[in-house]
Amino acid sequence: QVQLAESGGGSVQGGGSLRLSCIISEFTTSRTCMAWFRQGTGKKREGVAVICFGGDSVAYADSVKGRFTISVDNARNTVYLQMNSLKPEDTAMYYCAAGFMGGSTFLEPRYRYWGQGTQVNVSS
Image (tube, rainbow, N blue to C red; front, side, top):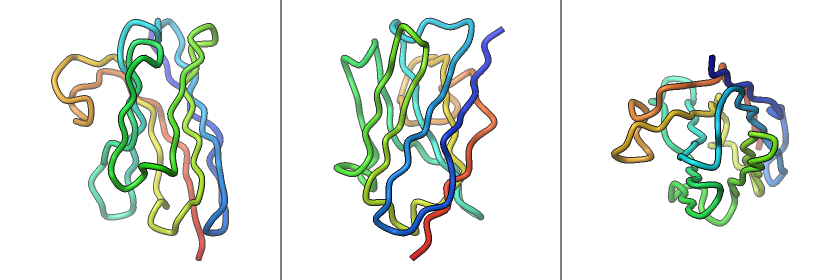
């Protein structure tokens, strides 16, 4: 049974950094796409970053380009999201997603498996 476990969230001041991790069990990260999504209070869940085929392809939402970096350790089945220069608007619950089913990699319904999320709070 595929399970995803996120960690690394917390509270930081604006301009700070956090590194999120997502361990995916019973899964091969090198053969498909995984993603990080986030959902702020009262907002829709949005795609933040995607990584495919062991890191051969990555993509980012415009709002995080140049600040966030997604990576994967295929040996450990772990996906990371390094977040630098954090802003208050980055405050959200961050979710890891796997089990991509094709189509747009930034669409929530295209992923079969989800973690429980890790909260990120950025103060001004």
